[in-house]
Amino acid sequence: MVKKLKTLRNKSLQCGDRKHVPMPTGPFRIIGFRDIMTGFTKKGGVLVRLYYPAADQTKTIEEQHLYWPNWLPQEAYGRGYGEVATIRWEPLFRFVQRLNGDTFIPAIPNAKPYREKEGQPFPTIIFSHGVGGCRTLYSGICLEMASHGFIVAAVEHRDNTACLSFYAKQIRYSMKESNPNFFANEVDGLCEDEPDFGDEIDDPNYVPPKALAAVVSVPHIAMEWVRYRHHPIEKTSRKIYAFRNKQIHHRVRECSRALDLLEALQAGYELNNILDPLFNIAEFEGLIDLDKAVVMGHSMGGATAVMSAAVEMRFKVAVCLDAWMYPIKDEGFDLVTQPILFVNTDNCIEMAANFEKMKELIVSSANPVEPSAEGSAPEARKAVTIRGSAHFNQTDTPFVFNWFTKLFMRRFKTNSKRNKFTAHDLTNYLALSFISQQLDITIDEDVERYLNEQKKKIKPSFKK
Image (cartoon, rainbow, N blue to C red; front, side, top):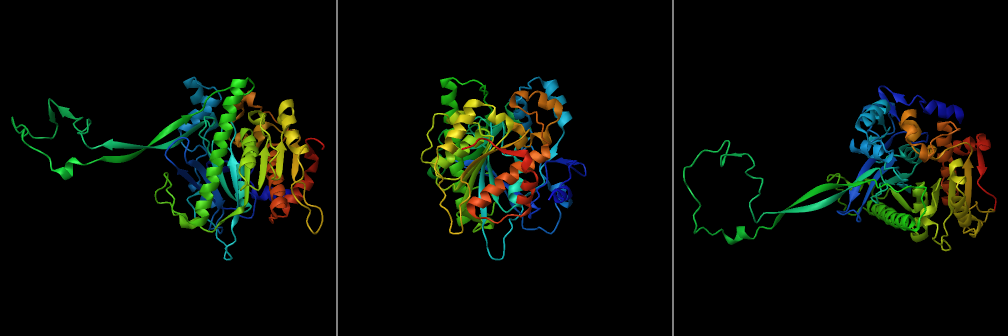
């Protein structure tokens, strides 16, 4: 397996002149993606990036590197990350931006999804980002999951925790009066190219036809930014907890709406993708297995995954990466029945209150999975720690930002003793192994082989 990973992955993270996040290692090497937005308010609809196995698996991903998208969804997101890292001085921001350069995602935009002859649908994952992230911060993980046959919807939350986001807003311009900007180029009362008709004035007796008098309005769509809102993570007052808890509930609704979106795609319902009016929904019809839906998230997204499992029974499994449990510390989870995996780093288990809430969720819960006829069922609640890893090992940060940028992010615990590729692979393969056991999904046998080879780098977070 180690040889296979070295063969599949270029650890220089360079293809031609393009720096990129880690290549996927699963059976599907070519991954497609689409950005989908629904709804016309900040609190309605959802914004996701959909990753999926692409139809054309004959070419190599390196051959198509000129199609790869920039890791930043838009240039303004760079400013958003600068805001998260509190890099507000313009010369410093430009210097850091130049040092980091551009990073690309090895995926093909708007590629047709892979469809087997038997019509076998793909299980799905809803992914929730952490504080200061966005829908592309976990591209490495999402690509890996998609390469093993999952359709992954990475949600970009509009609760002011994303480094930057946006939503569509419908505006209607009235046509009952003249457009005030219509004569913007007038010079001395005349348009520049308009002839002078002398002293001609409007007929005071003129009455417009009734059919014209009833004109209503012209629809227009504008994009409104949702900016990152600073709240110290280390502070734990009741006021901050109430704010964070409201954010969690907003996030849970967005995860549910992302699942609604996938249901619409699966059923072939009419869907208005604001970001792509020509989006062909029929391409995904019948391709999504909603009976095998997983909710997954990192940091605050991990807490979002737990809360989503509590309120949304359509989710069958929850996977929490270094979950920050503070925003749900007063919530009760007696009714949570789904299997849950916590993949922790050393940073996570050092936080006593965080550790205790996680332990409460696992130790006090009964195993919801009944034993199978063949023997014992897999462990339904589990917490493991990747030795020597840090909080940001479970994001694209180690592959995108250089050491100088990370100096400004020290409070987010970026220092790691574990090799960034090893931590990345262990995170992905622990999640894949757990999901496959709980949902009876067949995955590449090399996943378990790799975990066995690296088992000294993994330890239980606590004993029951």
